[in-house]
Image: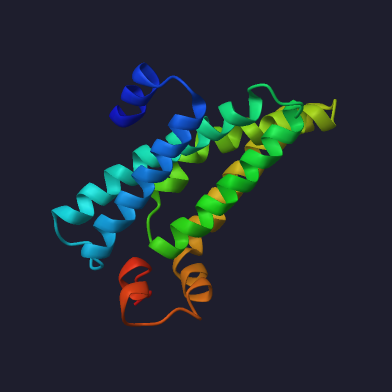
Length: 169
């Protein structure tokens, strides 16, 4: 998060925050590629960079979409949910849950706003978003290894790609 704070102080534009987040994510992937077994300090550095990259990207993107655009709240939240689904797939491929955890609050808020826009009942306003987000977290946690195996089936088992996306044992 310190990089995000520095970016917001010196370069207050949301585009800069988004670019900083993408750069942070790329550096995190570089650290992880240097330690595919996740056993050294390189892996620790990668973990914390993943934790900081997700909010930078999400809030930078949210600011870019919301600033001077004609997109309504529903459209912005649909885009954010799509980005967070992309984070989930990237997290599975990288074997890093940090991107998911960092984006979980934003995912919950986006789902809640989408449910608010489409319904007036108690279920759609309160219980629906909680059940959906909670259910997805439980399903993903229970099926992490199986999901990774399916996602990485076509990836090479050796080489640069295997260092970035380590195969499931």
